[in-house]
Image (cartoon, rainbow, N blue to C red):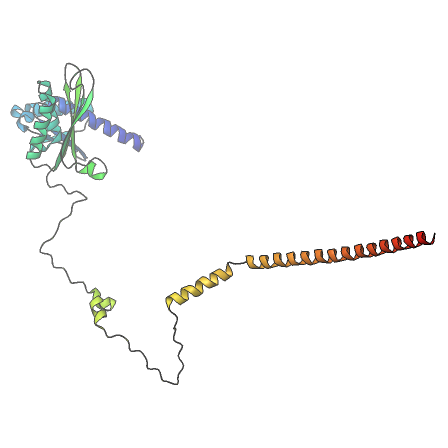
Length: 309
């Protein structure tokens, strides 16, 4: 058989054994089990609220359970060890069965839920959560939650620290699922921290490493300004910030006026055109004067011919 199938077979067998113990030892306050296979056989550790009822008179009940395990689940020499639960109110499996029995006896779900979770917190739990799902009241199913303290839902702490148990309450309208999660007292959560009040903390000497603090820098004497002789020429900036701003503005204005050249060219073009028009007017005036002189001469010649005639 492949390893994957073997894991599935072991998990299925474990769940079936757990259901068997829950049915057989429900009245004894069954609180879970641990199964470990050893070379000598299968070691099973039972947790119960009343170990006497699990063992029975003269060990009669425990022998019956052992024989049933060998025949039904084919276990090799099962060895059952029964341990008493120190605090039943901190065992999620026992609390879930108690709450399911209370609902079956007719307790109102709110009263049963608040009473149960108060008992869990009074026992010293860091946090608890109770979830009731099903037809709690009426024909429509719903979910009711009761929370106290601090509870983890995801990650590795939710699997290793949180104790979870389920129970079923069989009612007239249908079954009600009961889920209980408890964080036991003393559990070490990954986000816990402690403040040591009497811890010896070494002083941090940052001032020596960085060259002194602000106060030391202020106490230091300012650097001396070198003396300059009368004969030595030293360029001392005499311009004020306002003069500098004006110079900058003038430079920007001079750089941003490329339109002056275009204006000068336009004026030159206009003067050239005006000169050309003046030359044309002069030429036209000379031509008209010549034509006028010619006409005058022709008229005089015509007048002289008429007189001779």
